[in-house]
Image (cartoon, rainbow, N blue to C red; front, side, top):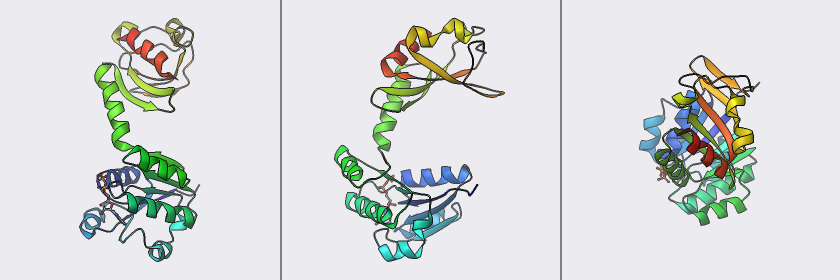
Length: 219
Ligand code: ADP
């Protein structure tokens, strides 16, 4: 299968971190920023880098942007630039366009442009950290909709040796353990017979209020 190619526009704190992580994951990344210094700093770490204004349609065309699988507009603070480069990526026909928003209104404008996904890095990180602070066993929190989320929870020592049927989170709390991460590897869709071991991390999906009850029960 052809390796997915990403173009990241705006190599500020968020864009640079995203681009570097995609590289670490083994993908090809073209990074574009109009600030030469920013581009120089990353040029040896990304597959390609270009110093350019991402609102210049001719430049984007000459870079063959339309052939990329996914474009991420990581410009936040300059809303005008964010919107103009998002429009261009959409018009050039990229399969997937993801844009970063810094406010609710900015996000709404991006949605109206038909982007595939709007990300609110500061807001989402604030929510995740708040959950981690109040729940000692919670390692990560991902919102999948207003009602549902996925959490990663450390299995406390009092649950060691218990089978998932004994724990029975689906019947008792309305949430499901979809994976168990342990040193030896990850168990996807564990069965009722699987038993929790020391150091296990449970990946649990469910309605937020049900997950909260489950978190409380194990803390
Ligand atoms: P962060 O908060 O993640 O650092 P910023 O919005 O401050 O995000 O940074 C955005 C980056 O996008 C900056 O490096 C800036 O030079 C770049 N940028 C802004 N406008 C354009 C544009 N029209 N074309 C290319 N890069 C741009």
